[in-house]
Image (cartoon, rainbow, N blue to C red; front, top):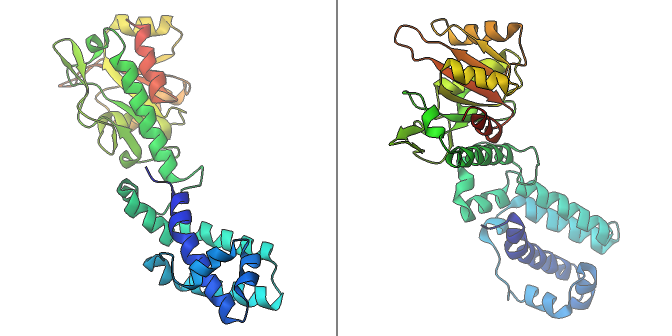
Length: 298
């Protein structure tokens, strides 16, 4: 784990300060004056101007950094820019480099897993796709942990297997749904989870929760379990609202019809059809919540 702030300290600051120290010296300032302007020691300035610090090649080749250094040096020497203004200008520039710029690239090289997010992201943005994706995956992992620690859960797994899914906030496609790759299966009375959750690996359960969201359900997560009238009755007794839908109809249309008069439904079920196994679907705010509901029927 390497934070982007480490790259700022280890790569950006030495390169930036050495370039700025050089630029200020070229404009006639003494090492003492440069040290005072930059708020660093004179010995540090000496290291910068004598090339005793390592500069990052990617930053050295960045035209925006060269332009910033020249602008700051001109402004500081002429008195048209205060050190505080220079600091603010530099902070803004750093944020730009972190948000899809060279620092973001260096961060991906240091943490290769970040490259999996092929759209631009701001690592400090609390609403970034990166954070939302990682929080959703984490939520599914927590839900799976609940299932693993729920005695008897394996008995609720249908013949086709179960899956636990959660949709990204605002998600509207299967690629926006985190789930277990393959299915959760009952292997000799034990729930077996084949791998860590990923996006885009569920089709049926993901399609159902997306259909529910399209029908104005607030659910972001779903879990399928086997159908039994006693299971539905137990869920109703625990306070859940249950609605049946037509297993042989188009899934999106059937879910929309089932939820039309009952938008707050958190349990959908179908009793089977030609070649279709009857299944119950638990719909909730997040994966740990729907996973915990299995305890209502055990």
